[in-house]
Length: 114
Length: 115
Image (cartoon, rainbow over all chains, first blue to last red; front, side, top):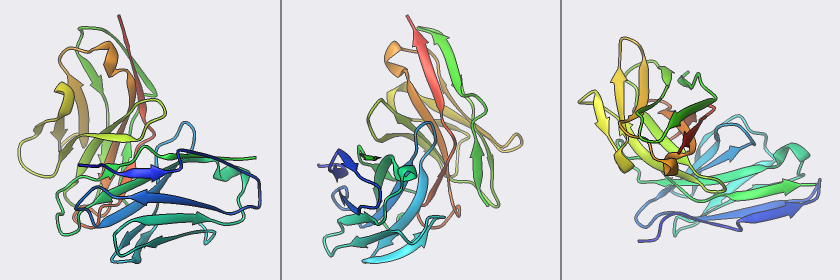
């Protein structure tokens, strides 16, 4: 049973560029959440997708956007990259309707903006 | 708003000794609490959760946690630490408690187990 997979594992981008990160949820899961983990900090919630729609959003600017596909996989897009966007981006999947279940995380994508 | 606090940046313990990693919470309603562990250059691995029921929750790798409502705490414990337990530990709370799976994390506690 494949867990949550993210690609790429590492990425280096230049300020002002755009980036797309990808996530495949754990088999059987239908909800995907994205988190940003800056160095030395806990993960911060960016947004969550369910049924191909953004359902919740954290305190992140509109430069951060996402998408969920019919197969439940998801993308995180960040436009106009800033140096401060450098972080580990984590994808988590869970199963809607199972309110007492935990979220499973991928290994993350390390984004470096130079 | 829901929140958790991890008062210790780092915990040092000798191998074979018991360990405790502290977490306190602030929530409205009944809390849904979680512990995750992060090894270097890796994502988060689920350890255990408290939703309801017994205050002592048992999880993966011999870890357990005690939910204390009066002290609003959810401390992670292990009777005998291993060097391989050295990692970054995060306490988290679901926001809102019974709602979608959005997690609010603490800042993390680095556990160092010395041989």
